[in-house]
Image (cartoon, rainbow, N blue to C red):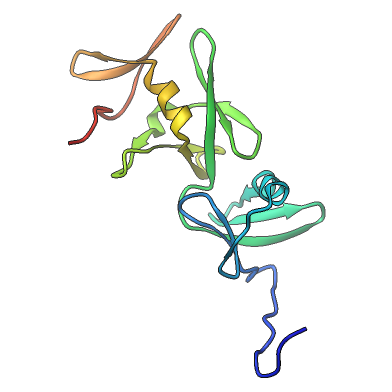
Length: 160
């Protein structure tokens, strides 16, 4: 029940009050969501739309979400003989497109995912695991796998 003098905010699908911040924290009307099951459901329900926005889909219901940075977290990586695969925060996986890798000013890796429609920010563990595969080669760096050497588009050396 709304207090006297404080107008009740009406949430709509267009203005849900939901935000996924730069650190991949879920926020509703300025309050951080902390319940693990809600976070998990929201992570799994986040979907990029054709117009560059994001929807949170839960069953038959949906609402737009403001995404301030990356929409997904790379929780871990897997490899086979020639590819690197990303395990994302929505519990999906996909092959890494190394041409989309970039290193932010904060030293955190990101990559484009979901057919290039969204950005994923690497967790510390995933970034470390990918770094274990990197070696210098010529004037650049490559990911070394049993049957492949994949060039990456930037210098991953620590910034000083």
